[in-house]
Image (cartoon, rainbow, N blue to C red; front, side, top):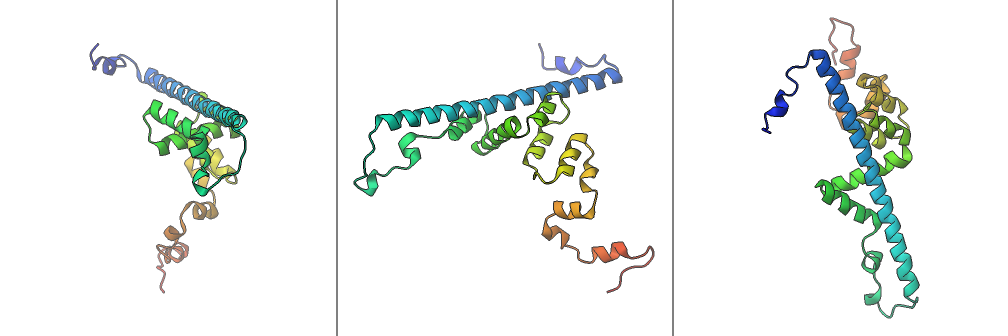
Length: 195
């Protein structure tokens, strides 16, 4: 099969059928993203359980004693090896060809989607939000319910219903870039603000 064959796959479809195919593709992608997050979260949970079992087994085998010198004092990582999170990051990074930082972020988001916001994560399986919007919702502060609801509805302007929301979203330095902007906005039409 040539590489051009998939390009011609949709040539005979009407606009309505193409729209339906796009929606279906988005739902399939959402379901795959949801499954990926669930799998990553389970990998993390299994690796944590394995690490705890290994530490407990080693603790039972070694009799407790006082260290003779500072050279004998080992860090937990030196003593027991990498913890469950580090193992999960390595597994996910290797399987998905990700950097450790990206893999760590994905593991954290997967755990949050599984335990903190499971109902919201299930909407990803239905293709309602995409993975980027879910990541935004998971990492958004919990106090900004209006922003989170706007993410799901897709109406990005709802996030900024008041000037307070705009000021909260913008860094302080951006608000101070043009101190004359507020008086210019408040000036009646046709009059410029004089200082």
